Amino acid sequence: MFIKQIAGVAVAAALMSASAHAKTEVEWWHAMGGELGEKVNEIAADFNASQSDYEIKPVFKGTYAETMTSAIAAFRAKQQPAIVQVFEVGTATMMGAKQAIYPVYELMADTKESFDPNKYLSAVTGYYTTNDGQMLSMPFNSSTPVLYYNKDMFAKAGITEAPKTWKEMGEVSQKLLDSGAQCGFTTTWQSWIQIENFGARNNVSMADNSNGFDGLDTKFTFNKPEFVKHINDMSEWAKSGIYKYGGRQSTGMPLFYTQECAMTMGSSAGLAGIQANMEGINVGVAQLPYDETLIEQPQNTIIGGASLWVLRGHSSEEYKGVAKFFSYLSSAAVQADWHQFTGYLPITQDAYALTKAQGFYSANPGTDIAVMQMTSTKPTVNSKGIRFGNFLQTRDIINEQLEGVWAGKISVQTALDNAVKQGNEELRRFERTQK
Image (cartoon, rainbow, N blue to C red; front, side):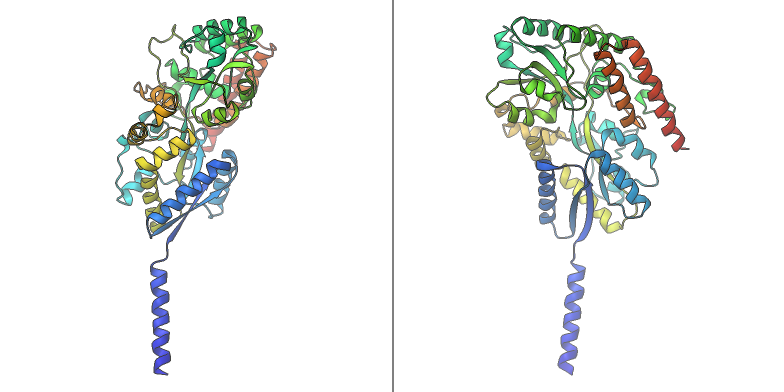
């Protein structure tokens, strides 16, 4: 009997010990599919193996929109994850859910985790900070648009350098057409690149209230002359074959892959896809063009991609795990590896310096263009980023109106007036939800 009691005590002690040393699980919902999803799983597994207290459990939830919608629904049902990946156009929506989010700067302070926001690239973090520089979410996969060009087609046309300005874009494209090219350039993500980033690059606001940073009563202004002239130039170029529209988001990339168009503007994270689809073709990377009549030295572009938001409703131990994971995720080694594998921007100066020291940029020309474009100037109020509620809907409105322009069905001024009017209606709808 005594022996059984001792054995029982020993078993109980063993169970208590095992329980005491069990890892605290932290659920992370994300929108990274395919190879990117596998890389996310690898990052989580490496973190889990690096310490014995916490276990990050990544869960793929579909597209960006699906992931954010799932997280909102889960929060209402009190089944939310600790971490959710949200695309940049969802920033205002997440900020509006003040009861649901746990700002990163508060999390790191509360958990006493070492955290220096000055180590992060300001052009990246600016999108996700308060007006006084406090980080609300952790940047993760950040990209920015760049210009890709076919060096072989350039050589055939006797062109030695990529165009730097929009005037040069027209001139270079005409030379390409004269040499036999079917199209000078195309673009992906036309709202992101030709409206949002055109404004940032040329230090022109696309809305009042500091592009939405200073209040919910924001009104769009991208129907003013600077934008009208730019879209009108593209409209005229569309008639002559200099510019060809290939569809929303990245659906226009095949025009570049097949060498129908000699240039395209797309995400810096798209370089790997270009190399895979254009094997044996010499492709160059250059900074996004700017309008020299508006600005002498161009501003930084703004980011796309997503950040990681922390949701309320979890234990203090889980939040300690989140903070530890964010420190790990921001480390130079992890960020450099993520940057080099995916083409997304490194989120810290240390990760950029490490990648450079490792010789990656020398071995892979063009991969540092996006970083230089983002860091060569200090962001202004017009190039810090944008913060608009219901902006996913507004992007669809902009796309529809621009498609009317490219098809010759509507004037540029009318199209942008329509987009501003309907976009402002979306802003007012969002504003009402915050009262």
